[in-house]
Image 1 (spheres, rainbow over the protein chains, first blue to last red):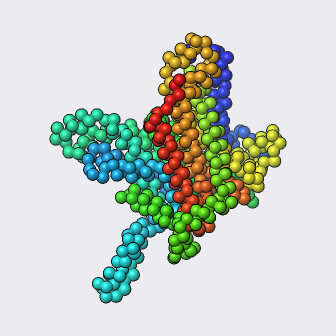
Image 2: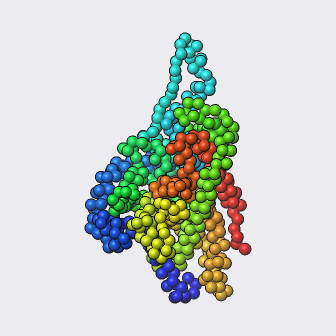
Image 3: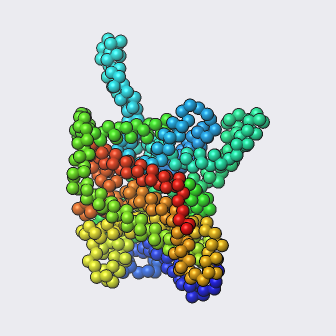
Length: 306
Length: 275
């Protein structure tokens, strides 16, 4: 800083520590609660010394909440969304930036529109879509009155119903969330900053479009990809509404949804220690990802602004 | 293809459904023009839900932005352990809204929660979010705002570091006190970040807090925490009133499009109050 202000500096640190405590308090408290036996958790106020029941509670939460399978589901879903989004948007941005075709602007605008609407806004129609993904064809079929045509050709009535449900499947969990285009937009912005000479040089050396993509664009966008991996993984892991709707089979639920069964109801014994132990387990993976990849994460978050 | 099937088809379907009335088994739909919208905006419950949502998102944005800004300013002043401080403050971003809901549900539990105890003892309030609507709203605001502090913190830190040191030094030489420097230089220079974060926080409070509400209050007590997104879910999937739910979706879509357009217009102009 510019001048020496010992008092103010002290104050800064004190306030900073207070701030960190405020932010960290819920978690610290949850960790303590997760180590206590049930008698201590339900005492008011709860003792602030950690107990020795941590592993026991973890185990109970693991078994009661069926966390093993839920965590696995979450993991599949989060990585699926991450991978899918990044691949789709890399190619999408690549084609929008480097290829000249007539519908380019249309493609970009249509992709851009999806930026605006999160899944939460279009849940109901998307749900119907997933319940029967062939719905559009069925709709087309009905509007064109093709059944009349078919029955005329075949000589008798044929009932046509196209159905293929995505409910309770990994595809159903992942696909609709891959569809949004935030990443495409980011990659487009990034590709636009890459000097054109690189592309020309590659062409001159006889590289095909795909070689250029693989050998030049991919290495250049490494950091961007890393940043997006972090963000999208956290996003995918923390999805709530969509998995809630689309999974009815407990074997397909994600961990965040499964936690709800651990929260003690009003008349139950207050097994908060177990509920909190479970929550800690479930929130650990995304936190680890964020902490270990902090540098890229911050970069990625801030880039999104542009 | 993916975008087409999962995005445009649903959007069109939604639009169509919003102007139709279907019977509960989805066999017949009748075209009824804008009756669903008229019904929606004359429905006192929906109007109430709008009010709740506005109150909710404004409070979430205000609380999390001011705390985020405050902590970021402090962290920027700190000379030592910057990286450590940043690490300590960033991780709540990774906590799912729903899990943040569980944590705060425990902290604010009327009989076991320690924060609830503090509120009862120090403020003498009869705290009971299970029965009292205002308490329930307060509860979901806390849970949602807490998680968003770190998001705001990251942006403010980035914004603060982008401010040229020379400006601050010049002001210091002119004899401006640290507080004066903050209000006269730092704060105006942060205004683009501030605006961006306001928009993002409001979008967050509108849409991503579904998990918080579902975990903590499920819209209750008596619809006191029934924010718009939750109402879409309730009417559509629990009440099975597809038309009403779709028209609510369309209202939300319009809203978010307006917000986004506003934001882009602003970003394009790159307004900066440097003067």
